[in-house]
Image (cartoon, rainbow, N blue to C red):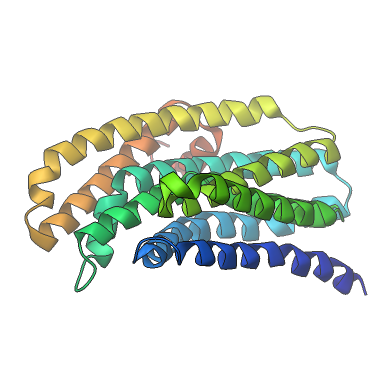
Length: 293
């Protein structure tokens, strides 16, 4: 009986997501030929970091959150939630920056073959950039929802889902005239951010507060490291532009080098800024392999 009680809000909460897909498909069908395909390909690329970071973190966090909720250890629950959310920011924000700056070369390498021409690459990359804006929010919500279920407060994710649907429809209606296919991706991102803000506010009250200082301190470090990575990627792309234009093999090498250097700059900068989660991880690795001991 309790399972059915928890399932009902989950089923209802999924309905707006499916409705959003149908609504955006309807609007896309009235746009330029290929719009639906551009959005579909962009969403596939967007979903990769969501699955890697959002779903993975949610799966890892759920049993810990559920245990603390069952023990009514709210202090540990708050600490775990704040740490998980900070970690989500540290993974998804640089991923968003990477998708925006490297969206076109990523799309070119993966999809630009056969009938998928350069125009489709540019349009898909535009949609990908718009989807990437809401990546942090979508992944963070996946961490928040299990907390609501652990607290037996299932109605709020449902309300958030319907809020997302209404916001998406409104923004599409307001912006599709001048943003075209980009409006469909950007509206979903903005709706996800609004849902994130709504659930964050509610959860802050339900948990009787948690360390915003810790959260914003970590977020500040992540933003600084992401900025350093973005500046690095601008320079690397400029230097590797001739290689990227030298055929498919050159594009693959240029993209791989850009991702490797950008990721290294981000990680080193974040560690140098004293990001707690990364510092702990590095220390554990050093102890495991006896480095610096």
